[in-house]
Length: 444
Image 1 (cartoon, rainbow, N blue to C red):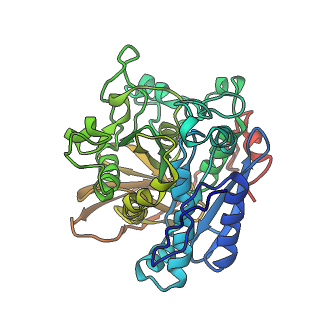
Image 2: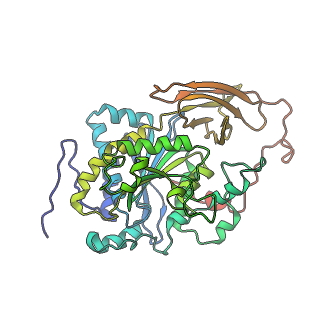
Image 3: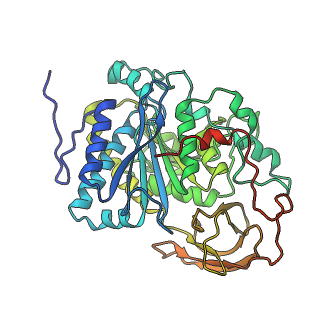
């Protein structure tokens, strides 16, 4: 075959060519082996056709959550024919490993203070179909869906409708909305199921899902609050934090926020490359809305360019366009506040709630009582509560100049005579009937 040109950059010797599924797996495994002190690979499940959904993680202590260390995820190739994100994430994994080894201060700080999870391909089956057609032949949609012909970004539980229905009522929560029973009677793709289980199993703070077909960052809600409106601004309670996240990526991308009206993505030049999802076009069952309403995680959707399957010679220029944006996005998780909610004996309280006055979306603490809250600068009033404990409120001022998350801890007093009336003193949480779907096989 024709010899392929290799771009060798000073920092790396990546091959800027498309990786097949088996090449991707071996690249990720080799990278994790080369950097085993800061990296490892794990599978979150299998695709319809039995291919691994392989995640590579980077952190100073791989394989476990460390107290107060924020967790972040990057997901590529959810639509199998949108292939650039998958390649960028494969390069990013190699880049993080090699730069760490070379002593790059910035990368060492990022990996030592953050736990980064990279799922380069959420839809390896769709990729297989798209790649068999290749760059020139691939249609706009071939390989978009999984092997069951399910569009994975329409397959998540639609919690947004529940949110709109209940937000005016004081009794319904507008965060950590449970998955409705009816969802399980529909067709749940194995890829969707694996990712849901993954999202539930780790205390992710923020996330990016990489797509293609436009050049813009979109952020939730993706589903419009008016069923009859195709395009309607539908902000979450965290509109300000989402805008800032979207802005971080767009402004650090070489062209996304340009005002050049001839470029790809020019229709978004007035908002400098970011848009509320539902204002662009509305759809239900998306992954970002699910992340936001079911967990603490804020996820943006990154549309990397107008060509869903760029030619191979575009891979290196695209890496250069997106590298800084990806790094800045990962660093931006160290923003707002974080802390531990403990009892008076110093034990962390799992599942405590931290709320911010004026933002109707609470975050809950992880297993050891730690929490993270992305917040913009200003004065915020925070309250920590937990079942059977007193509540504690603090006023916090976040200056504009902060380069890492402010630390705000809470100590809650246990009520003397608190007994859960249902369980007769024993804490018991009713598990819904579908719970064992998630409980069956833990993530290795």
